[in-house]
Amino acid sequence: MSKRIDVNNLNVYYSSFLAVEDVSLAIEPKSVTAFIGPSGCGKSTFLRTLNRMHEVIPGARVEGEVLVDGVNLYGDNVDPVTVRRHVGMVFQRPNPFPTMSIAENVLAGVKLNNKRISRSDADDLVESSLRGANLWEEVKDRLDKPGSSLSGGQQQRLCIARAIAIQPDVLLMDEPCSALDPISTLAIEDLMQELKDEYTIVIVTHNMQQAARVSDRTAFFNIAGTGKPGKLIEMNDTPVMFSSPSEKATEDYISGRFG
Amino acid sequence: MTTTDQSPETAPPSDYGTHPGAAANHAFKWVSTGAGSLILITLAAVATFLLMEAWPAVSMPAAELGESVSFIKPEDGQSLLEIVGYLVYGTILISVIALLLGTPVAIGIALFISHFAPRKLAQGLGYLIDLLAAVPSVVYGLWGVAVLVPFLQPFYQFLADYLGWIPIFAPPESGEVFTGRVALSAGIVLAIMIIPIISAVSREVFLQTPKLHEEAALAMGATRWEMIRMAVFPFGRSGMIGATMLGLGRALGETMAVLMIISPGLTFSANILQPNQHNTIAAYIALQFPEANALGVNSLIAMGLALFVITLLVNMLARWVVSRRSEFSGAN
Image 1: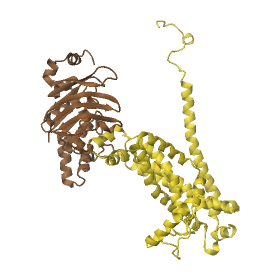
Image 2: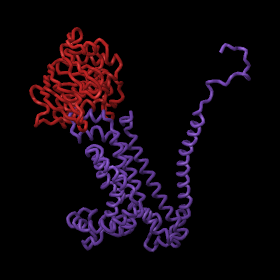
Image 3: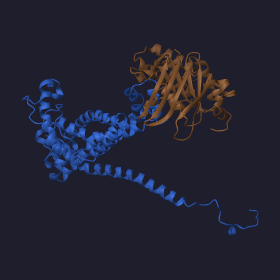
Image 4: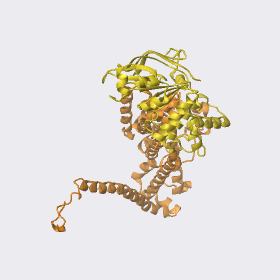
């Protein structure tokens, strides 16, 4: 269920533009790993290479390896569609399908993987996924209402329910709380702590307090200037990163001297 | 600001009074309201005209009307109502053929341009489609008669030979499809005519699909086609229906192409491979109008009224379909 990720010498391109340069890092299973850094440093771009969503953009490509439990996601016989069924993703803005009900949203991914699912299995899965996303109690009486009728925070938890319904190996979260109010943010942070018992979680965040609160390890990305590629500056256990980082740039960023 | 003894007459002009944009805003309000009203007035005027001009023919006893209008032949048992019936049937039959053949192709083209083609090719194709929408129908009619109908004739013969047992493909009694000037040809040419408008509108709608929803589908492991079914179609549903209705509107009202292609007739036949079976309201009006006397014109206008009513009904149906699930639309 939960898998480790090893990235070796990854370069990420948009056409000929090198967006992220030479990243090597390891992400442990059953943990939360946070990517922090200033805007434009390539942390979201890098995150999207972990489920091959990067290449959805025309001209985008990657050099190097991403190993999930030893299997290179960019190997010859790997289908990006299959990769995405194993590495789930939650986006910055909540994006439930507006034409589907709450229950249909949860089942959307499952219906792709396994077209036939019995009614009772479907009901069970909707309940367990929504419980997993701490949303069940709030929506159990209106599962047939459109997903867009929920509040922003609820919609984001619905998206998490949708992602965990297909039982991925890894869950990627791209600034999942940046469009949410503090209470909804707290709900999602609590949820991450529960989810990490089962999943490998990687989160990109602009909010350093959030990284400090939820993550076990933190990676700091930085960019030398506009037009230059983003780089991984350092990665360490979160308490170490926030108390005694080894790089000057990290310390400047964390203490608020820039960025 | 501290003067309290100033009388209102000598008070300086207020800073919070009118502003320079107010007049333009006012003018805009009236121009837009006027434009909105104009469309209602036009519609009402057309409806009134149709009703008033059709009335003399509609209210007259059938036998009397048959005597004075050359194209109604009471000796064959025809009445105005019967002819309108045949024509409404023919119009709808041919338009439905056009829609059934044209819509899937048009949606396919739109999807190819919006989601599959490389950007440069997509742009060129888009221009080409817009251009096709601007080709006059008489040109399509000429091309249909001169090129398409002769080309399709052997194919029709094949259909009649092998699928003739299906009633709609039944050949004429001789078993030979001599001419391609049949309802199916008219339907095919109309399909080609409505493809550009449907695909142009659908393409715009598909391009508006939020990236967010497309990525949501892709990120859970949807293939591109599954993504289109999950994100693009539901979002573009009302737009697609609107585009189809635009196409249907063009097909229902199309005159020249049908007039030039079809070998007309007045029956309720379902045999789309047989000539002299069908005609459409618009083509019939165009055919009879030059030689019609006063009452004949009234009769033709009654047919126009029927077409007007069909178009209204089709549009209302489309609105109803779109509004049925508005709660689930992409708009909220």
